[in-house]
Length: 219
Image (cartoon, rainbow, N blue to C red; front, top):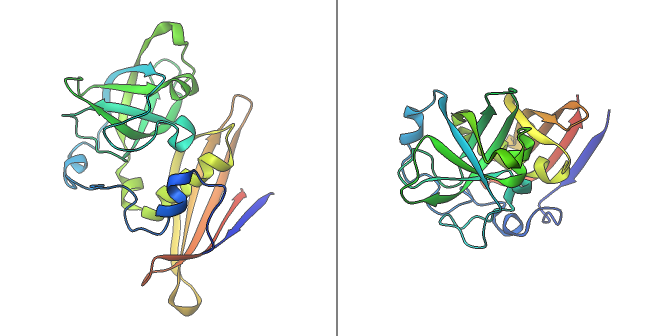
């Protein structure tokens, strides 16, 4: 069993640059919930298609394609998915799943299509020469509801660069000493060679949203 401990609140140099500054904000992206209700109406999987892109320097969301180790995607500007939202994408052919973050919105792009970064497309086991694959697009509202779970997801993507997060669940929430809250989450990680389960825990002060500690361990 391996454990990785990161103690706050002194900054997190291993994080991508935007999160070093934004780590303690209540919502990490501008207009993070512009239509809070909208994606709760779209919990069911949508059968659609995925294409791939190398991404670009500027996005409509102001979130880099390199976010989450390039597990990122663009959606149509009229789709129900919002900037910064986490979406599960399942390859219909082989059942492989990746969790991607919406980083761009494209005008006149069909709501049932998602444009994945090349690395996310490859993580689904798809050949780039195919260009387009059939997928199930599954909003992940349970992840959106859990702010700290989303932060842990982003950190884990950076801490385990050779693995992709394929599933996520809340394990527990409880109060600890001094009124602090401890939240525990489990992430299923896959590489071409193996599948591992990582348990991540964060302890924070609910009054200030300041983190006391974060740790991960393989379970």
